[in-house]
Amino acid sequence: MGWWHVSADTLAGSRFVISALAEVTASLITLQQGAAAHPGERAWLDAYQPAYRERLAGDPLTALVVRAALGHRWIADFLTPTPTGEGQPAFGDELARMREISADAARADLTVSLGGPLPALLRRSDPAQRVAALLEWVWAEAVLPAWPQRRRIIEADVVARTAQLGQGGWAAALAGLRPGMRWLGDSRLQINEHGYPPRELSGAQLLFIPVTPHQGWASWDAADRYAVAYPCSGVLAEAGQARVPGTLAALLGPGRAGVLVRLDAPKSTTQLVALTSQGLGSVGRHLKVLLDAGLVQRRRAGRSVLYYRTTAGDVLVEAPLHG
Image (cartoon, rainbow, N blue to C red; front, side, top):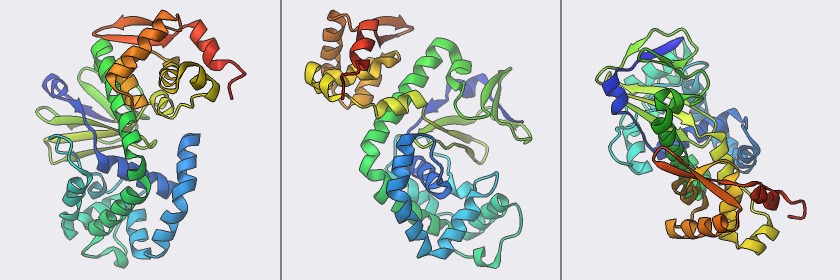
């Protein structure tokens, strides 16, 4: 199996980051594969995959580069650049780094992802630039319209993972982060189940990047910056798309009903703000009313206060009269 040796100092400096480019890359992979992880992703594919296929049909050379970059086991490194970890750069700034990749470096990456010599059509001077142009199209057409909502789901995942880290350490925070990944103990982080040799991360920066599509990968920049992209937890992704029954919204008000619907699992105020797009003050007022009505309860978990529905709250949300 492939694992990294992560020192205590590296773990202490690790953090979760948001990357619009990683979100778009994960979306590109999903469009290319055409497989949906849940109904919401299927609806998104049905909406945007026809235009994506039409875009590639009109540019067969870029289609060939993308197929080669995704490979069979390894994604070409230029498609998944490791974030710098400095702030939250705009998508265009992240994409500019990809456009600066040299032809030699891009061709070398494609050789690895293909697992063999490049076909003549791929021995070009612009493979990275072609993929960058396609990513720009995916961003504008298929991701940007829903980016505010996607970003809220990502932020909620970061909040949840950070809470897990505070309560149970890295073993809890990394459990189930992506298939084949887990904390082995003794400073070892299993990245996947492939037979790659271990990598030493002492003194390096380690970043974790949540994305809403059900995709993931590992990347590194030289020997001092590593990253793991992983899909947001299903609970949070589904909660971000939670449907509020019309009759419940009419009874409680849409804002308060939206908070109650999303409390099927314990969540903090910060998570609710991210998932509902409501302000902190509004969420706080809704929670107070729901607490007073006996529809939710709260408990402390470390430094966080988590809210969850009571049996009465479950009955109200799940009543069959809701349409």
